[in-house]
Amino acid sequence: SLTKAAHPLMVELAAKLDESVMLSMLDRGRAINIDYIPSSQALRVQEPEVLGSLAYCTAVGKISLASMTGDELEHYVTEFPPKQHTGNSITGLQQIREMVFKVRANGYAETRDELVMGGSALAVPILDAAGRKIAALGASAPSIRLQGDERKKTLSMLKIYAEKIAAVWF
Image (cartoon, rainbow, N blue to C red; front, side, top):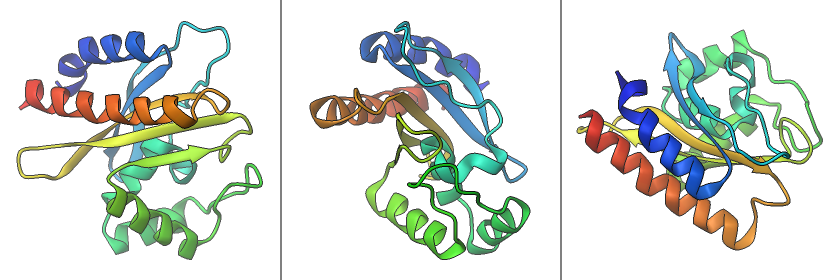
């Protein structure tokens, strides 16, 4: 399984970043975390296990939304109407479409104080041999720690480990 293949690499990545690391997939149109390695630091961000209604304001959830078709995305927004969690939360269908376009263009997703104030995250897709998004690998941290050089390092490491996970899984 993907979880079994990815877990040792996730443990390694979490140790290198010293931040929480998660693996997420779409399951019948819902984003779910299938593996989670918490940071060893006392101050850490805990991602929800079931992202369902929260995918639009989490980095791994945004990767999942970016893999949806237009109809699937509209169905998601209808099923889970976006709510304002913080002043940075996106709430409208047009904002979510713009976010999806940005995630697809950039090849990664990020959040900063969208679900909770003080919590940020980055995520990248894990691609199969045909280049389809099959999962998302993300890291979350207090916003104060996930900026500048640490943000760049985290994003770079996520990309490297997403490729490693894809290589051992396929």
